[in-house]
Length: 452
Picture 1 (cartoon, rainbow, N blue to C red):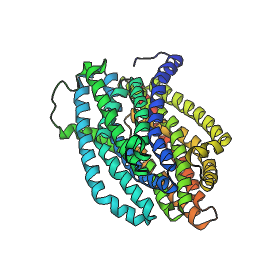
Picture 2: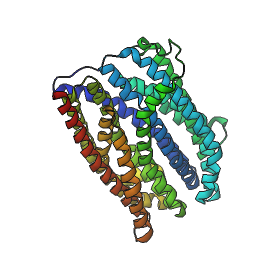
Picture 3: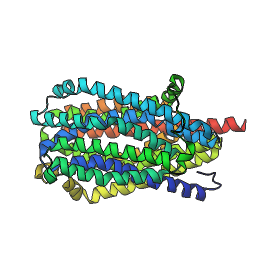
Picture 4: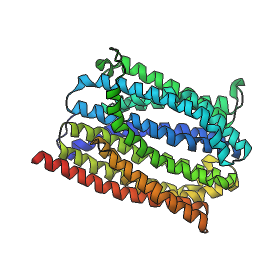
């Protein structure tokens, strides 16, 4: 990355960083998308089983992986302040954190998966598919978290095209493995939805090994000699990372877990409703990659400029990113409106599931504008290392506003399952307003402090 002089240069550099992130995020989401769609071609039970399994796993993964994204603003600010020699130590300590988190998740999952699934009172076949899906997926937890550290390091240098290429390699790998293990191609056992978990785990191992090789061998990463010196575990350094990472992780967890909570609360509906809800939610999550990618790009550029104390430049980047995200959201809303039939048809051939999915997709229209404002602001605030307010905002807007509103409408009105989506929309809107106010305060405070 480099210092920019005007808005045109900023837009060019921002887009250069953003596009590979967008492709990377879309690619990672497509792994879950492929799991869901290909499982749905086996049966509605397989689709529902993978849906429940994904709903349990996604908030856990995104929240814990969010902790590791502390590497991005930390390294970006080190680079902006020209303190490159501190980078390898920070990255290795993050790897230690990733290993510890992985072990905690695997041990916890061993004891908790069965009681959680039993408590949901699912159809027996759906519950069994969800259990096997999660069990196989667990084999890929360690490499997935280590990959997240490598990815955060690579992206923090502005080399987002590299992680894009890694992800593009992962997609065909995942597709082939899904075909082998879900459908039993080439003599492999036909595992249905459970096979999607194994395919994803093996894919995670592949992308982890590729990223480690690139960081060790390829410029400009090898110049940092990340693995050239043995750094012992440092509790104090890990705590510094966690001080930034934990609020990020919990904020992401509160945001993603509300979607999982809604799916789980809807488990008393029939299999067709669960499958339709998950299909529509899966597509909405895929579209969320647009504002999320803007958010991640903003963390890099805002962090770089904040590290160099160029706060007017970091402010300009923030509003540039928000404007782009709003433009994206208007486009994606139009896509949903015009192509609901085709979108629903990608997930299922079952007429009942297809019809209900089309209705759920209409509610996804209203997600777009709130996400387009909230997600980029979260990224900008992380670039400033201002993470605690985002955590509080996520807790209040999603769990104190969104979920109760959804439960009340979904339980006590004729909206039924659609009521939960209305609650989600209310929570997203509240979060967007709160985050925007915080961004204005932080920007004005930093600019005033510098000029004082």
